[in-house]
Amino acid sequence: MVRQSQTCHLFVTGGVASSLGKGLTASSLGRLLKARGLRVTMQKLDPYLNVDPGTMNPFQHGEVFVTDDGSETDLDVGHYERFLDEDLHGSANVTTGQVYSAVIAKERRGEYLGDTVQVIPHITDEIKGRIMALGGEGVDVVITEIGGTVGDIESLPFLEAARQVRQDVGRDHVFFLHVSLIPYIGPSGELKTKPTQHSVQSLRAIGIAPDAIVCRSDRPINDGIKRKIANMCDVDIEAVVSAVDAPSIYDIPKVLHREGLDVFVVRRLSLPFRDVDWSVWNLLLETVHHPAHEVEVALVGKYVDLPDAYLPVCEALRSGGFANDARVSIRWVAADACTTIDGAKEALAGVDAICVPGGFGIRGIDGKVGALTYARNEQIPTLGLCLGMQSMVIEHARTRLGLAEATSTEFEPTTLHPVIAT
Image 1: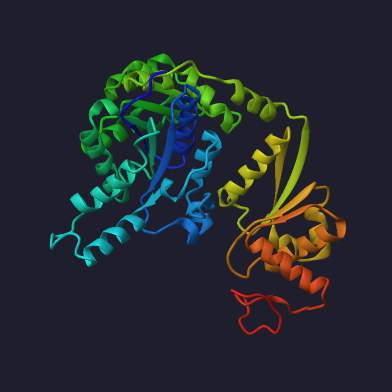
Image 2: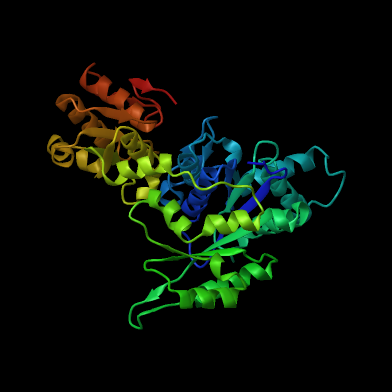
């Protein structure tokens, strides 16, 4: 297969609502392109002012994903790694906070030579530089997911930078994929396309015309609706993709392949390709749907009302299960339910293993310690991560060393038994 001489850029945007699955759509398409013999890398642009998600409330943003170089990144980067089966780095996650910090630092050093520093061109140029840095020798396609929803004020500099990338590298080397919602209205029994039409209008108003539209819905989208979207949004009929809810996230690449999205992308970008090699992915799907073993792991935390707060940990547990021909089911256990012996026994009885993940603050610590004491007494395999590991140290000091007041200086700076010092 003759290699592409210039890196192509594929941008994934979202419309109508958040949490439609842009990250999974991008990851699945990346998997398909890699299975066609292309060299793919991925990146997430996040339009918040935090420098990274490491200090963000997991209720608002979900859990962080830590890359191989120790960077704390968006949880979607974890999907990228799992689907591509490659290690990514901190450069795979760019935030508004990082961009503004870099631009202000350059201004203070005088690098702009007295120019008035503005969103355009200085902020957009910084964003473009980080996008382009992922391309070059050894990369055929860079897939960049732009966080947020089209119409959000925060996303505008990133969308403008993406528009300029198409201008800079040439229209034949850039592809825009828009993920949008097609809601079903129960009383009328209809799927409605108007929200998607308005979303695409907003995108076109800032100079971006999508090349393909992935339509998210809870039921199949018929050809009549596809023709209507193609006509009203000015895309080819084969570029309107129906993406209904799948039994597993690992089924999504086959859903997109059946709809012909990967074929349309490689032909639109004139990329060299081979037929999709499903050998490795089919083995994974066999384990996902027909595992030889079943394992239940209790996840003891204080943010269990929002599963995304622990998503990378859960996906890592499930991936570990797949590698051992096992399905891992998660039992969500609120740490506060384990503060007493009876509470811990009721919440954790019958599990095969326990995982105590990270978190912030003193709330839930006694519950985590109670769960760990139960795990020790019942000889249940247990994994502690970050604050969970610190809780293991506290539990050991209290129950095995007799230091009843043992704790972390994070919670009690003047404690007499600082077994954890922060």
